[in-house]
Image 1: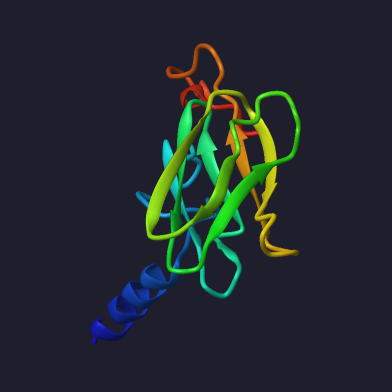
Image 2: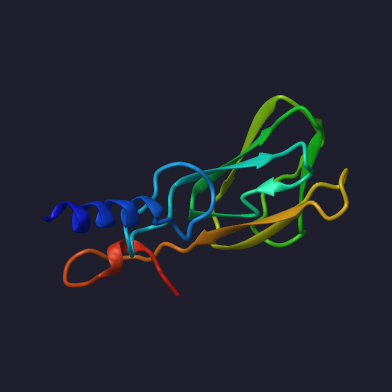
Length: 137
């Protein structure tokens, strides 16, 4: 019977994941990173996911629950403005125009940290293996 191999393939496909952090559409294999991601700031004092990945020009939204958190970025060129205060029951977004890795922390909860990886766009792309406009280095 052919049902067993088909069922095994469906189960395997359901278990596959993405190497990109955040929520939202998952790109296909070798596809560009998403334009947006969401990071949950949890009551357990962790950022989930700890590393979000977006394309250059992409947006990351921090969703704050019932425990107050902030987002303070490492002082590096290209980092967006911090999200100060003790935010609860709200979502706040930041756009990342420049490729790089941006580490951040919640200064209210020692050890609560995360990062945003922003993939560089390239010129050209498309046609004869051009890579679709994203640098996958």
